[in-house]
Image (cartoon, rainbow over all chains, first blue to last red):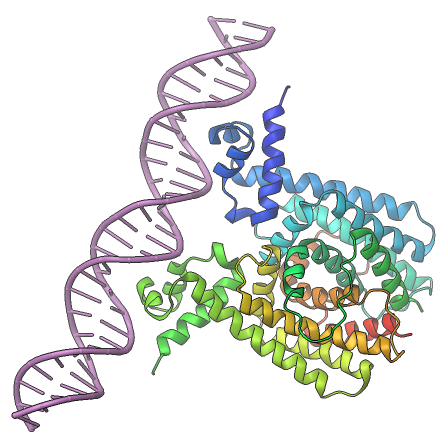
Length: 203
Length: 203
DNA sequence: TGCTTCTTACTTAACGATAAGTCAGTATAC
DNA sequence: GTATACTGACTTATCGTTAAGTAAGAAGCA
């Protein structure tokens, strides 16, 4: 049972930070959910920012490692790009708090992101940039600006995960005889997204 | 000078809500920036939520009208899709607070979005869904799930606008000999995005 | 025109709630 | 008995919101 309270705090913190973002999350709520008192949080973490950092950095490191591994395990730019997209999607699906935390961070201009966290995020993004650039050099891809392809991949994966609730709500207001396509699972989304991205970047 | 304070409040509110989101925005800051006192805000608006609603709904209505008009003014699914994407991009570029406000709303599950606001957002999204469905029916497009194409368009446009700062920061950590592609302007992004999306959905 | 009355557009002051963070003390394990 | 892992009670600051009061001008009437 060593460190069990620390683990409980981290779990509740991940949940609350992802739901409300850094500022709007209250330590009292985290304490209540993890059945500890507020000072217990301060015993384990220097302050609110340190707790947040622990939550964020842990996942950012995991993600960067995962996509690097996935890309390294595939051959050729096409397969590597597909592997990247699907690994990214799978990761967001497994750590479903993480996408929302990232979305909050993005909409806050990374206000609460430490330099180490930014570096880990950069590692994740560099991986796809490298794949795209390699593909262009090898003549397999034809891309005016790889930055755009990167944005399309990353933003679609994250937004899909974070806007589930609001999408369902907004769909309720659709008028007329539009066919509403079924909301895809993350696995399907990643596959379809990979298909579309590959089709759009192929030379 | 009639209603000049009201206008000042709305302007400052748009700026602050986009920067910090609903919860983290303080009425005191809005009051300070617009050179009025806090209760003066309450004279013009029922409460914080009503002020936010005024800010958000105004832009959501403008946007829905703009993209509907753009789509209606173009012929054929291909041209309509391009017109939609470029009109959406241009709008985000003109109202540069708006994308960030939307991003906050998305990362908060639309917690602060009224039913009217959700309906206006739905109108904007229905427009692109209609274009995609028409294209499929006419045999011009071939799309497994139009939802994914919609996500790619909307999320890329919004994220591009909202992650400018953080992208510049993250780019600073890129190691090795990666070529870093230049950050595209919104106009370029919309054009390139339209190219890529069209390429990826064409039958 | 001049006097009263009412409305508009605020201001100053303060309230209750809730936030992050602190500190002195305590139970438990070794 | 000493280090570890806490708890309860607190401080300070800031939040949204309201109550109460007021200067400036318009409206109604003589």
